[in-house]
Amino acid sequence: MMLPAGPAPADTTGNWVDRRAPSFLRPFLRLARADRPIGSWLLLIPCLWSVALALRLQADAGAPDYGHAAVLVALFAIGAVAMRGAGCTWNDILDRDIDGRVERTRSRPLPAGQVTLAGAFVFLGLQGLAGLAVLLCLPPFAIATALASLGVVVIYPLMKRVIWVPQAVLGLAFSWGALMGFAALIEALPPSAFLLYAGSVLWVIGYDTIYAHQDREDDETVGVKSSARFFAGATKRWLVGLYGGTVVLFALAIGAAGGGVFAWLGLALFAAHLAWQIRRVDIDDGRNCLRVFLSNRDAGLILFAGLAVQALAA
Image (cartoon, rainbow, N blue to C red; front, side):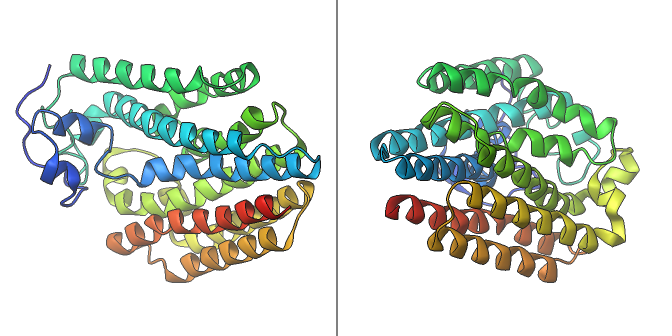
């Protein structure tokens, strides 16, 4: 099921997988993007926001369960790694022919022949089992909420063949954690949950558009659709709208959850970071796009810090 490890993919640089992982595991770790943890961070961060806001609602009701919240953060972290890896594996299975024609992705394990298709499916199943183990630790309402996302997760890799802004479907999938903290901690989905989710969807479309500009020319050659191609030279104007909508919806979510000075401060710093991204990004410079995209982890953690402090102080 596995062929020789071969070189690292073209879209990676030296990292712990290349330096320390056993050679027989490296292709599978690359398949799961373990060499690029940013995806796991971006999947986890909406979960962190939702746990913090749900904890704030609990605190306002006079019964904050800090221990449960801490356990959920740990479970969501494990689940984010497992499910991001499973999602990347599924994406690479479906895109193995396209990846072989794109400069940045042609050295990925499947198109490079480092992992067989059968091996990829086995690895996908193992990651799915890890995600299932985390899911079974959650209450029934949260399990049902998580399962409702599976359809979006499964179809996302196909959307680049169908619609011009497949990032919108990615946003629906990657933002699901904005619901999960509420579902797991308070076993309900109040208005603040849906406002947080909607804002996160816009955030994902924005940052993944920046990321997609690295592949704009290759996507055009291959015939793959993306928001980078669709927005083209108007990308910065679209980012103003997407990121502006993100901040407005997050403000409404925070207000619905009780507000608080630390939460508002976190949102202000988050908004300032998004404004910096819009000013800084150069859509014609792939390295610049990658750096700006990666900075979204810091933006998300800044907002989480404000929400978490507010929840603890309430």
